[in-house]
Image (cartoon, rainbow, N blue to C red):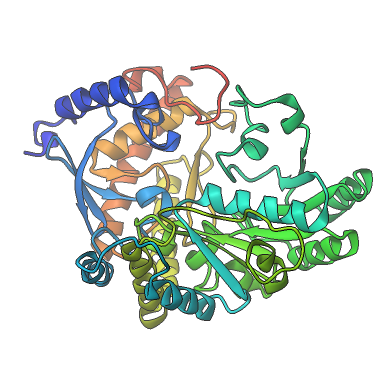
Length: 444
């Protein structure tokens, strides 16, 4: 039974499951962004199953879900075309001592979808792909430093990136010192960085777009800077891949990186990622290169047949059903509804929807217009009570207009409470526990 039928969301089974998770798994989840510290106290549902845009928790509550699988499930859960493609491979074996023919088909399909790339290598997660890009750039250029966009939240679980975060414990200072940062949208600052570390920077790595569109000429300017300073330009397309266009941001904006990485939406929840790029660079990790070999990517499960079948089904669905357009249409409807609801309740300057329509996030600001974890907690509590599980407003194509309308209604109810807290200049009475916490923080 949906426990909201009693007028209050109660999650006894989820609370018990969370305790078991913490007893067995450090952090209680396999991704920090899924941790129960990201949700209001005692309101972190543990999921039983999902279908389409809906998920059910172990207490029997149903939710409309946003940001599904940390943006990976863009077609909705258990999508029929993807499930059928996976099912066909399961009875044929999943892993062999030599490459399967599925690897040929998957590579050809990917490179047809992302024609700006010439070669591709598959892996299971985004961190491995981005780290392989960094290693390859260092090998090709003979340079030690990595320049990453400091305005983007995440690139890898590996030392070259995590050393730049507040959770840098366990990473040698010497490693941390080899990564430097540049600001998004500022070509002059990036050129100053490249000049300061002349002939030391192996690559520029960034998400080509995030919550804001790239300034006019920015990506082309980065391309020119990379060429002039002899470094490799890497686009992290984990999020922009498919959500911006089937060929990623590079396909939409027309600027071709040397290397790019894809994941998340590529498998619709199945574990598959990709490193793609120029043939002359990628071959450094192959057998048709005369120089020193690069240990590019070598993963036991990188070519797991059913995950590659899922990726091919995803790409076919995107191109045949124009999924990217649908994501933008749904996102625009949602953004308009949320903004109107917030404005009507007098909190339009405090609940702020940002980002491309296919990749919406929201900010919760206090009475002084500053980001607030306390107000985020209040907002999330009210959304959960209304059957909306939304750490972001990132849409999947499985959402219906009715789902969007219900979400907007719940947002309006949450905004009414938000207004009361603002008037009181204190959200504490509406939190019912500790506030949610940022993922990257030095202490527990």
